[in-house]
Amino acid sequence: MRYRRSRASGGTFFFTANLANRNYHLLTEHVGVLRAVYRKVRQIHPFEIVAMVVLPDHLHAIWALPPGDRDYPLRWSLIKAGFSRAMMKSERVSESRECKRERGIWQRRYWEHQVRSEDDLLRHVDYIHFNPVKHGYVRSPVEWPYSSIHRYIRNGVVPFDWGMDIDADDSGFGERE
Image 1 (cartoon, rainbow, N blue to C red):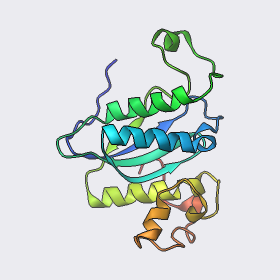
Image 2 (cartoon, rainbow, N blue to C red):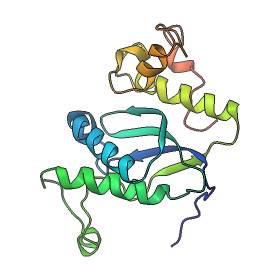
Image 3 (spheres, rainbow, N blue to C red):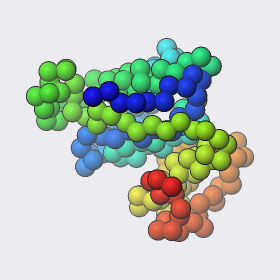
């Protein structure tokens, strides 16, 4: 089956990528490896990380691709493969994954959404930064160490206390709005 993906050159995209086993905490336990893989892929295939949060079992990111470039699938393939190669083999690998020489660390697919307006971008950035609160890891977005909110605060885009007055149960930052 072929999945239809947005292929806008130079577009901005929101992504969610999940571990295959949502009980694993590999992404935060090995965040240094993930960062190194991201850096390496960005050196070869540049893109801007507009916003990002890494949670134990999944991550959300907004990427802006260079003008004329639309190959985010290649970048995701390299990131997932690079991270997987750095992990010790301990996961169960299905026969279909084994035939394709895949590890069982990541879900095969990822979710992508093309950002189409400034309002759309701002809603997704807020979603990313509030996500650790939504999942109950922290009480305030600034408490989560693996988030681009720290860059946003440093650059004066949002105040240090952004999100502290938002009720996690009634945040409006749902999976699909």
